[in-house]
Image 1 (cartoon, one colour):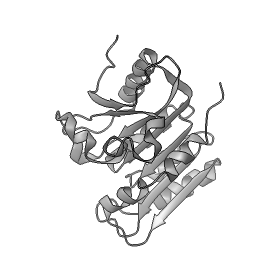
Image 2 (cartoon, rainbow, N blue to C red):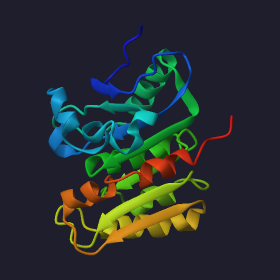
Image 3 (cartoon, one colour):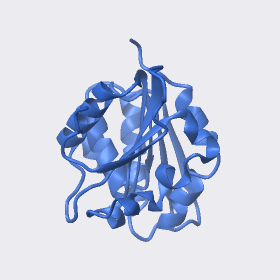
Length: 205
């Protein structure tokens, strides 16, 4: 079996049979970079698995090297190699990331906007100009941020939301009033709602 290039990773929910299964690609934040793979499970879907129906998915969580940002080209090649070796439902590949991972997730969407059936981006530092450079609408996106985020100003998601609306497509924005940076993704990932929402969407074959 070919090892996916560029990133070490943790994975949950691999199917025992050859029946294709939906996949969530999760991109962690700045604090989980490095070579200690256990750090990848600090937050988000790999931390929560199998709660909230996450066992319905393959949860694929690469680790970003220390002192680097997520690289969209490398992520695209990594995901392609993984999907070629496992029973992945190609019509139901989803993307989510928090903080640095929210930024990286958007960069990946900009590179291959039709690959992901739906995406959840949480408090990412994304410039609206990045969205304006994309031609045509993206598949459904759900943004999360908080007015009291002390690390990444909420203006990033405000501007991104406006830019995505102008592109058309389905854009949902949950804008909390009082949560801090980490509290934002703790709240967003609590419960089944976003994972159920992801499964409502698929790309055309």
